[in-house]
Length: 105
Image (cartoon, rainbow, N blue to C red; front, side, top):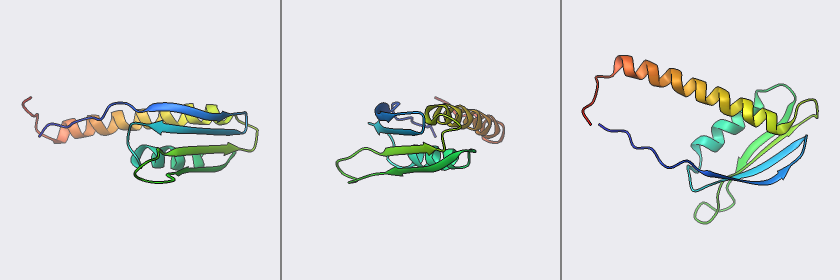
C-alpha cells in the first residue's frame, strides 16, 4: 500500500501584525492541517484566540486566525507550531516504519 501525498498548499497572508495573523491555505487540505495549526496554537501561552474558518466548502480555502495578547508575535507562534508539528510527524513516521512491514514501490 503506497501512501500518496498531496502537493504542499500555498500560503496567502491577509493580515500580519504583532498580535494578529490571518492567512489562507490554498490548494491543499481543507480541515486536517488548518485544525492542527489552530489547536496547537491555542495551547501556546499568550495565544488568546486561534481558529480556522471555511466560508463555503466548495469555493473557499481555509482561513486560519491566530491572535495573541501581545507578549509574543502571532507569526512566531505559527512558526513554532509548524516546527512542532513537523517534529511530531517525524516521530510518528519513525514509529510506523518500525511496526509496519516495508512496502515494495
